Image (cartoon, rainbow, N blue to C red; front, top):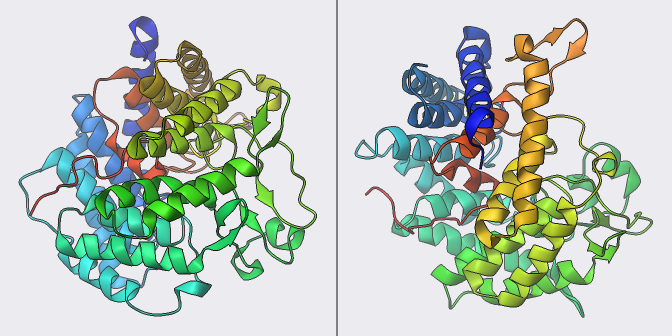
Length: 412
């Protein structure tokens, strides 16, 4: 995506990020999570090692991974992909594929623990989403294919999602009860509601179901998938340029356009819908998703809601989403948007270069939150590497914006 001087700038910033994240302060003691902690840093360093030479990144990747595994061995962690033990195991799998594809498989015990967990009851009261819940567990299981235990886990996740789903004339959806809402959302929606985002909502279920339906065609995944897509699209609202996907559907919810981001809003929804459309070979979905993406690309910066450089809801995330969607569609407006947001990311990173890795310069905060992949410096670095090198950014499967289990295979 980037070439010439822009590519040189991106590689330089990514290298600086690697240098600072490799310092002792760059490893979050006690936080092993994929989203914010040492296992996510391991993923960043593994891809830095594959893309660039001279940063001792492979050694740093293994050091971060060992720290995460050490936390996993000594502290109870939830099962979730973004903050729990499946996230550490997902990172171990991806790092091994990059740095040591013939090495020993370290995740067998995690697979069995997840299978036992999914066989228990009580999932009707748990999170269903990507970040905290069932979809994230399914994403880990897909990464572990073709192991039979992994396919069993995928099947169980489908079953739990099917039992949790609600249905109306528009299709299938998943209700979030008030106890599973956090912060302002619990106050704003005291009776709960339906989240439409990728991170915590219906949009994030769709690419998992699409891949699961291909692998298990006799399961409920295909029917759920079609119902979820219908429901999501039926709840689009009018925006300045055409239909747009809001944050949340609930009594009293304001059904206006969401910000431009991966977690919520049209760029993230368009990306996951494109992935699902290509998996399910649904050309109508692909056309709708491309239109949604192009309208998002044309949205004025001043109304985008972008205030930082992180992946989740910042400029780097938008640069990567538009880059991925351009690769899938060939739509030039998406390439232009990708370059715009990548350029913006480089500008804010270079302006805060002395603060890379944390802290602030002359009272100016750094353009990310923390050191992790989701909102922090590692995620920015991964995006810049993806935009400036030919290395396939397989790490973005954790964000559902590329095909899950692309080979449906793994190390035995």
